[in-house]
Image (tube, rainbow, N blue to C red; front, side):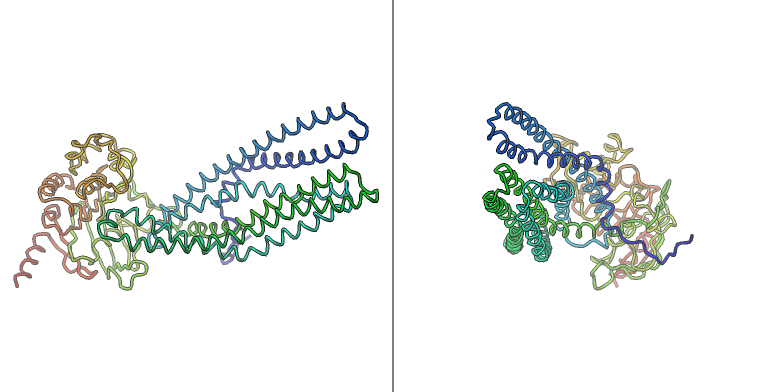
Length: 574
């Protein structure tokens, strides 16, 4: 039977990234259901105990029966206590496993997201990860308990009807009213939850930006501006959160009041029925207890309904992130056994998302394996953008960028492991200097780390630091100079002897003496490797044998290094 390719299969109600961990914990959920059922069954024992005591024990002064009943009730209470502990344990175990799996999946998706599809600030993305806690709490604990407890509302009403007859009308009328109160508040809760989350992400964005650039904030006097943004976001979120809590409390408060009304209503109606001889004292006592039990799960349902809007908003935001395409081809990407380092661009044009003008315009070039190319040009001429395209961080808007004769878009992103890159901004990670150089990559042992550390000049200043390579760095390497951070980033790029090196302003923060010593060490290291070097420093051109000059996103000159430099000098002299 053939399948029509135009027919799109229906989209699942819940995403696989959320449902797969829940299905994996189905056996744990089964234990939760069993425990919850037994807990609800044991809940009837207290009311039956009260009815028997009032109707059978007290009138006949049956003390021995009372002792037996009390022992039985004590056993039930102990089992009920143990089952509640087990239920809480199983729920937490399932929740922790789901939290771990979903959190890891979402983090991997963020790492693999395509740069051109990234939306929002760093703080907003970080804030979105907090919404995973909302999903975990909803799907792993509150929901499961509520789902099991709700059917017992009907069972409880049946038991009340069997014991007290018309007394069941009181809780039976209040149950739909409580459900209706929760249903009517949902539209406003949905709107306020969405607005609250949006303002919360904006507040998180300001916070991350301020903390990440605290030195610049202080030095540039940006504190008033950021404080104003923080105050505005804080006020907006606080106001929305207050309104959401007030509306959400309507259903939960009404559920609490309904419990009181159910108990009082059963007592009042029961007193009337007792006057006509239709009800015993024990039956009235049992029904009054059961009426409260019939309403109490609705308080949980009301709380669940108030969280439902926030959960839907969080799910929509995270689901939108998870549905975005990731780096690499849709199918299985290609990979290289060995990388020769051949680079080719054919008619490449590119503009950053949201930019009005393209950064690169119809750029075509070839770099042979082992060729060392320096990219020169004014600020904003497209040099760093070209490096990002070669690294596959962005796809070309037009044309094709190829590595070893293969379109980079067809390659598995793991191909970057065969390249060494030091971008313009030397970003270091929290951890030791050793970890920042090796990055946990296989094959880079201490010997290789020391080799590249000596090449990049890291060893010169690490030897003067107390903890050496085990010195733990703060965020982004704060506490180190710009030149020291560049040295570590360069050592990271050189580790593993990659065949293709992409270095963007690798010495811009170094002094002349350090730079010249580094060039002498690198001269032999880059022999036989493909080097893409972006620089404004004339000394670094000694590492290149070819120069490409960019101007306004186009190649203005391309040729041997000495020829391009002589041409440039003659042009300036003229």
